Image (cartoon, rainbow, N blue to C red; front, side, top):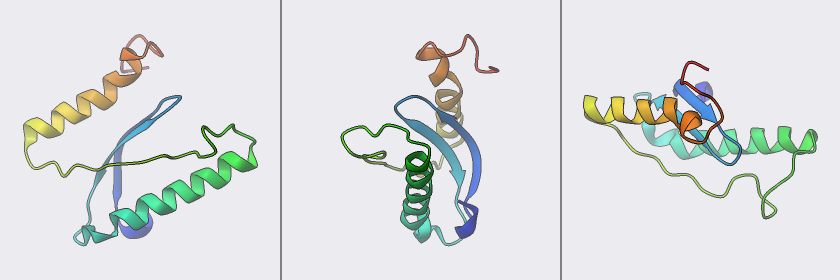
Length: 95
């Protein structure tokens, strides 16, 4: 993401989806290119390591949200931290 000056803040990788929190650069029009590069790089790595695809793809979609309020920011951050707990992967977000 840094190639286009997007700054990765927080992330979580689960067995069937990921969540990332990134900070936009001044020119935020590069988001789709950044996500496309991330998907391509990751799919190449997964293929090289013989990781199974789902329905012949690694990535099926993505959507973004521009957070403009502090309360929304902390709500999304909380969601990222607690998603692995919700799915039973870990007992606490610290894990």
